[in-house]
Amino acid sequence: MPKFAANAPVQVSSKETEIILELLNLTVDTEGDIVELGCYRGDTSLLLGKAIQKDDRFKEKILWLYDSFAGLPAKTTFDSSVAGDGFKEGELLVSKREVVERFKRSGLKVPRIKKSFFEQLGPSDLPEKISFAFLDGDLYQSILTSLNLIWDKLSEDAIVIIHDYNNPELPGVTKAIENWRSIHKFSISQKETLAIIKKIGCQ
Ligand SMILES: C[S@@+](CC[C@H](N)C(=O)[O-])C[C@H]1O[C@@H](n2cnc3c(N)ncnc32)[C@H](O)[C@@H]1O
Image 1 (cartoon, rainbow, N blue to C red):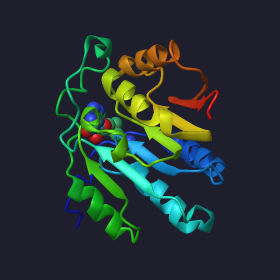
Image 2 (image 1 turned 180 degrees about the vertical axis):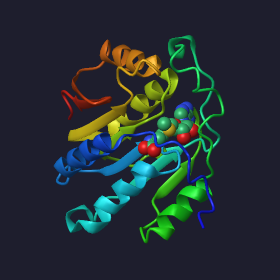
Image 3 (image 1 turned 135 degrees about the vertical axis):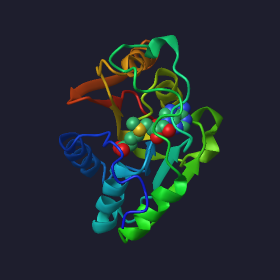
Image 4 (image 1 turned 90 degrees about the horizontal axis):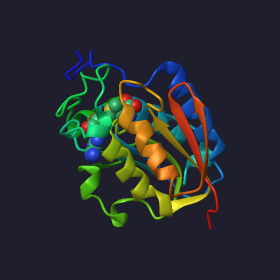
C-alpha cells in the first residue's frame, strides 16, 4: 500500500525526463557532482539516482537534492500569470522523509538531501564542483537564487537544465533566465520546456 501522496501531480513530462537523462550521460567525464534544486517528491531525483547507480562510470559522483519541503515560497510580481494561478505559496509540499523512503524502497542509495529554502543556503551546502544541475524551483527568485548558488561551482562542460522555460504558467522562470543572461555569458537552447545552458568562459 502506498503510504505517501501516490496521486501527486507529476511535474516533469516523460519526454523531458528522457532528455534530462540523455544530457546527464554527456557529463559522465565532467568533473563534479549532480544537483537538483527543487526535488519535490523526488520523481526526477529517483531517475537520476538510478542512472548514476547502474552506470559504473558515475560511481565517483554524488547526487545532492535541495527543497524547502515546505512547498513553494511566495510569488513575486514576475511570477504572476492567470494560467499559473494554481501555483500558490505552500503548494507542492512533501516531507523529506517521503523522498528518503522512496529511494530506500527503490533499492537506491539515499542522496544528500538538504531541507532548506534556497535563499538560506550558502556555498558550503553545495558540492565543490558541479557537473550537472537540474533547477526546478518554478519561481523567479528561486531560479535566480539557484543560478547564483551553482554558477561559480560549474566545471567546464557542465550542463545546467532549467525546467519551465517559456512555460506561460510560470513566467518568472524565463524572466530569471533573461535577467541572468544580462550579466552572465552562456549558451542556451530549448527542448520541450527545458532550457539547456552551458556556461561560456568557465575556468
Ligand atoms: C515543480 S517542483 C519540483 C519537481 C521535481 N523537480 C520533479 O522533477 O518532480 C518545485 C519544488 O521546488 C521547491 N522550491 C521552490 N522554490 C524554492 C525555494 N526558494 N527554496 C526551496 N525549495 C523551493 C518546492 O518546494 C517544490 O517542491
